[in-house]
Length: 449
Ligand SMILES: [Zn+2]
Image (cartoon, rainbow, N blue to C red; front, side, top):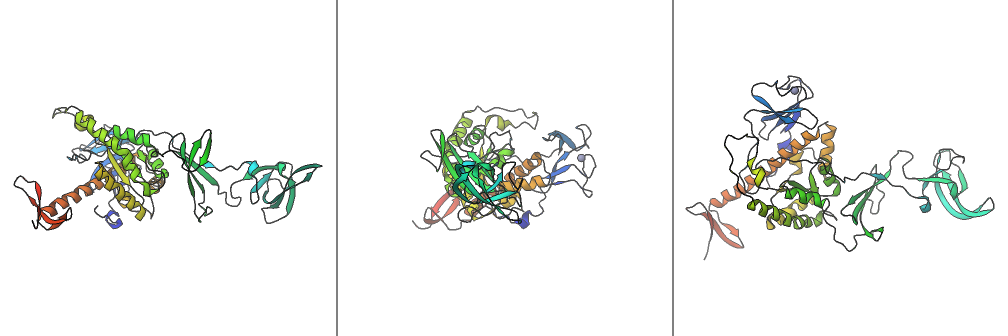
């Protein structure tokens, strides 16, 4: 890949709101409208919150609605680049559709039967201390009102101190939030199938309380009979959101391969098809291996589709190829760290072997402010913090994918070029050179016979 540094991308200004110095070209206001630039820096689109399709300057036309209802205007004569390449879609268009089964965080609740030393508890009404919280110091068998029972020895959590011995049955609940900060322990369940899931547990303030001084605990679970057991079990985990990914490929759309369920769900939240594998980035090969047959199916069904002739006068926004040729694409988006680039490279190699059309998204090309170890969730969170609409986020992503394909094409162009220079190079363990035949086809000539 062509390396893109954050400096290169600092002010590519792929999109920005209108401002006093850059008022909206459609409605002339200085706020609420949004300009989209292509990677050459040309203004290509305006999402205008005020103008109606009829009242545009002569060189602009309305091309549709953003999801939030604002009209989208394109410069007349401006067309996104159409690619003529077997491998890539002609136009990079994300096709969001509502995705279901996106899990949410739930509070960890510890049932009273699991009461033990160290728990923070609240007492039933009528007991001393009102709403005060106590920590369990000890549990022992004792007698209360003449009957044997479990007795809890508690100490008040507040600085006024004091201890209390009370029948455990007087405890109302085990409190799983931090009384000082309100931070909570939470979990989220990522279902891979009805019988297989991954559970991630963490404190809302990301405190380091899990084994190995980690700020989270991520574990696979499997169902045995009616109950869940921690561990992978004997069945193979499918990919996460596998059926979304496969349907998108069959429709000829883009699928994102990311590291981690949270990243996949973030993109699913935008209506995109995204997948990952259980067990972390080192198992990334599963993504290519499981999706390869579906990509091959799509390739075969495209070839089988009849060629349709299109009238030159036809409405230009209609993409002829989209109707009969499927060009699904795997967009590989690893985290912004060495593990993330290993993940991308591993997938890249397997995609080449299995002929999966793919492109690697450089995290810094998507967003120059991507933090170390950052992923698409960090980016989408940042976009939302800038009050970007989903529409705006998707346009940014389309442009980033387009740029990634450009750089992959330039890269392979460069390789071809280098081959044409007749420079000695090695191929399949042999030193020789690539020479261009009269017909323009490269052929290999070893240096020594
Ligand atoms: Zn405007």
